Length: 168
Image 1 (tube, rainbow, N blue to C red):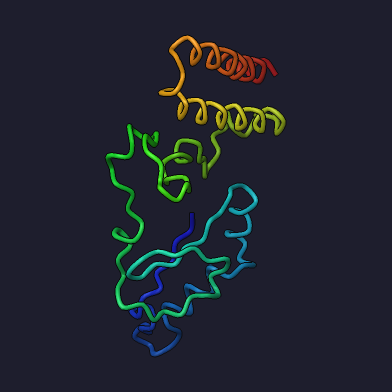
Image 2 (cartoon, rainbow, N blue to C red):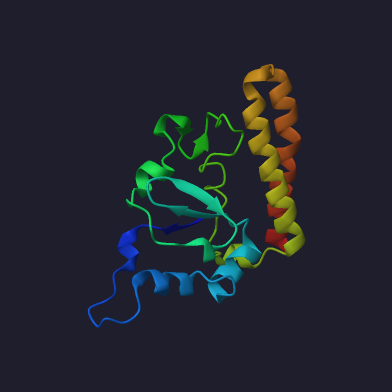
């Protein structure tokens, strides 16, 4: 998630009377910026503008810097009681995922261990982790036995992936 302030305060120029902070931000967030392009290659990037509330945008060219407030916390806050640690325990009425579901998986700077995982292994690992998240969300609807029967093969396959990667 990339979030940009759309408030009027970004119209202020630095003391030299030059470029406004908003113009500098727009340039940094341009669709062709190298860091944003790299981020979008590695992650499902969602773009948001905020002032008095947050809204999803396709591109940051929609920045107008005319918002009447800069209320990021109120705009983006997910109630803390929706989480157990970083795992979401409640869902939004709209069906959109809450911000904690992917937090545990983000690796903005890959560890050396992560760098050595072959792409095929990494992709399968990510797929298994998504399946585990989905299974956890169904846990209350399943009997303990059903849950464990579905959990076991996913956990074993995940462990085998890491063991095989260690040997290679």
